[in-house]
Image (cartoon, rainbow, N blue to C red; front, side, top):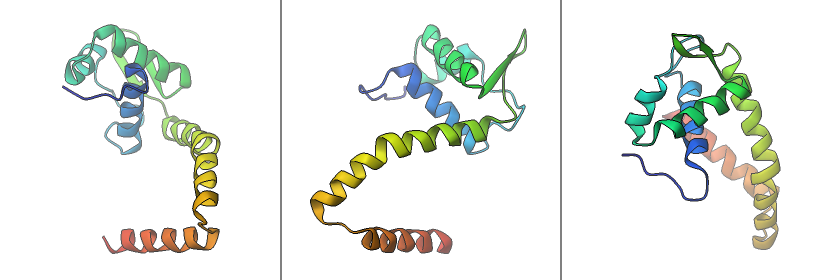
Length: 125
């Protein structure tokens, strides 16, 4: 059974997990995603919770329902997910980061240097 954070509703965490899988190519464009019941069983949650997660992704345009066949990945799914996450990053994460940087005396130059090191380490892998 999957462990969920208590800070966010389970259906949101499920939707984020499925979105992560879509971004990683586990489910390609126009590819079928697991059925609602299958996904609920996989994560050990109530089917209604999974339905809510799928409805959330469908409303966002990330997946679409083909009646009688199930849910599939929308052609623009990756772009939609990235755009939503960029907005979340810019409006929720960055203000806290900047506040913390100011408190600790971390400069943009220091951040740039750390970023470059991380980028270089990733290119070696």
